[in-house]
Amino acid sequence: MSDPGDLPTYRTLALNVERGVATITLNRPQQRNAVGDGMREELAEAYLRCDRDKAVRVVVLTGTPPAFCAGADLSAGERTFTEPGPTFSAAGIDVAAWTLSKPVIAAINGHAIGLGLTLALQCDIRYFAADARYGVVQVRRGMVGDAYSHWVLPRLVGLSNAAEILLSGGTFDGYRAVALGLGSRVLDADDVLPAALETANDIAENAAPASVAASKRLLWDSFDLDRAAVGERETEIHLELMGLDDAREGVRAFQEGRPPKWTGD
Image (cartoon, rainbow, N blue to C red; front, side, top):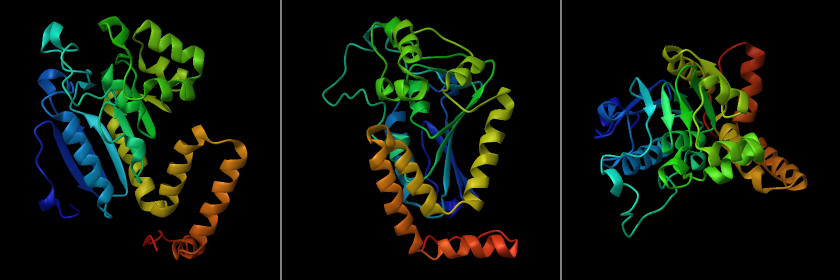
C-alpha cells in the first residue's frame, strides 16, 4: 500500500497515504457519514491494512464535512436496533483503534454522535471542532453506549462525568468535550484536520516507530495494571529498545542536528 497505486477503493471511506501518514476519511456525506453500508467492515480492513504497512507511521481518522460521523445509520427507522442479526456485537467495529501499533489521531471536524463519538474515543489523540455537537446519545434511542464506551469514558473523564455523558445522553460542544478530558485540543472546524496532520507528520518524522508502538501499547494497557506492573513493563521495554539501532540513531541525529533516519531495527 506504500505505493499510491496500491490504495484500495472503498464505498464508505477514502484512504490517502502521504509522507508516512494515512488519512482515513469517513465518506457518506449524504448520511452525515453515519455508520452503514459496510462502513464497519471497511474501516476495520483499512485499519489493519495501515497497521501492516511499514510505510505508514501514523493514522488520522476524519470525516467528509460538515460532519465527522452521525452515529448509526437510522434509515431502517424503528427497526434500526431491533434486528441485530446472528453476528451482532456492540464493539462498534472488529478492530479498535487502540489495538493498532501506530498512533491513531481522530480529527473530529464536525458532529460526532453516538457511535460516531464512541469510535473516536478509541483513538489515541482527539482534536475537536469547537461548534459541533457531541454526545453518547444511545439512552435516548432506547439503547446504551457502545464501542467499549463504559470502559473508556470512566478512565478518561472519571466516573461522575462518564455517568453524566452516558446516563443523560445529552450533547455538548467542543469546548465542553475538551474541558471534560475527551480530547486535547479544540479548534475551528476548518483547522481540525490540518492540526491533526501537523501532529501526525511530526510523529511520523521525528519519533521512532518501535518506541511509539511500545509507548502506545503500555498507555492503553496501563488502565488494567497497577503501579508496580507499569514500572516492570517500562523496564522491559527499555531493555528491548536498547537492542535496536534506532536507540543509537536517535542520539546520533540529535547530536548532528539532523532529522533521524528510523529503520525500526
